Length: 639
Image (cartoon, rainbow, N blue to C red; front, side, top):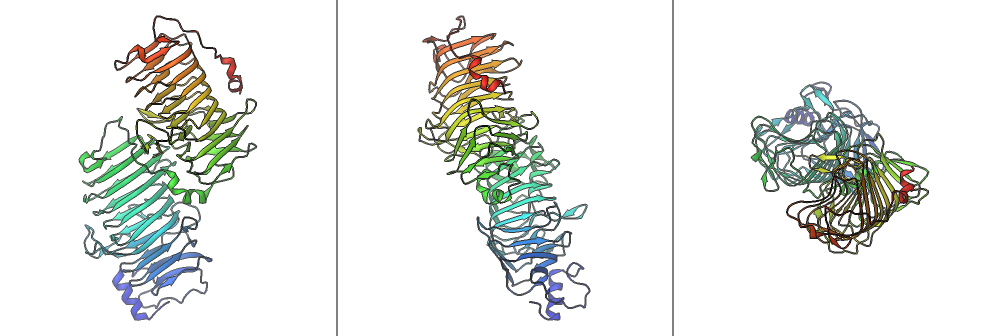
């Protein structure tokens, strides 16, 4: 692989690699090819294809020279030594061909310590505001030119871990660093995890990236500067660490790159998007969950620099962003490859999975049951979640859940510390006034279709505790959230106890529920919108806390769902039933006790929209016809 001394010195001069990272002294020829063929070090100056049966080790700076292609087949694993001098650089005019697959991604990592090595660096010949033959902040690498269609090769199904080594106080490596990389380069399906600096940083260039997953990178998940103007399609950021910087940082000249379907979730607050020095972008499809601050505009950058779904970024505190359709299920090939333990539920359940009732399972981050898969939870199983908005269980459209609790041994889901978590969400294919493939307000979940008989599985004897984590001032998780769930789904014997938002909320759909208990939910015990028209039979709402909202809130189009035997008791007054925006229902068997106001009709909704025991709802009447009592739910309250 190593050629003559003169060619080596010429290459060093051209690329600016006259440093101790790449050679011992100015006159020395390159060292001999390592005896151990698994060792990667020095300059690769002939085409090289790695062997996927070998675990390779980076033991210094590895550079792919101009005119050379490094090919990395599916399933190859490359492990780096620790230190700033260890990274893989593809020089200007060189190519890399990473041929991973979903079943066998290529993995580049170190020892599991964040910031342990320098990651992957690619230098291209496209334009950058730094001009032609700019010098990178690492290794004296040369990048930048005039060929925006330049190709540095191909990357597909690559996982980079533990990168982001610090060079000095103001300069660090990233997971994937793209210096003036051109649009002829294809980059698809990349995961960057556990870094101490940015996940990916674009220094100018025109390259586009599709399907990028970024988890717990301590600085910015996505960063660009020097006039990058490519497209990032399907980006997903999740942060469960504290003191990260942002999901996006944009700096420098605004060449208006495009992001399509970008989802970012934080369980620790923080800032989502920071725009600096007049940079900007156009984002079509944005979901932000759990951040304290959505946008931070620095250096007098105007909100108009950031276009969100066709309008200036809405910087008001109560703005909700939930239009991205990208969710964690797209990245099952990454997250399923790294299940923390036998007791931690995987981020993506893409094949049928049956839990063990003898094991207490944990939830750390979103847990998604993907299309075609069934999650089976036997009687007596306990699932304990971390608190916060990043932690929930979601059954996606086309997936199923089978909760097999019994009266003697219900399934229990709760948080580890008694603080709010996201609860259980189910996405179905039934009708909703939001249409087909609507986007949920959390996590880029997709729901809604035309099949009112859709079946998302079975739930029986389930207790949900401590749910309702707050997304923002106007949007929260619930205990049980039902997005366009069809009436082929069976839901019975469910209790939601001690939550910060609603007990159950129906977003359209036709699903029915029997035997529901709600205790001390801070918002609404039962909530529906988007035209739900199923039946809720045998409900008991028990309220002993102050400052709750209602026992029932109904909003949106009135598809006249039916409630049979609905009992609500308050020891702290408040409002029993609130009807908004022309919604309504028919209630056969209603008991309301202890409320200051039985009915609150908003937005000019008429009392005739709510039929209670065969007549228009009447504030002056007394309602005590429901036969459902608290004793019916001793199986839940005695736990």
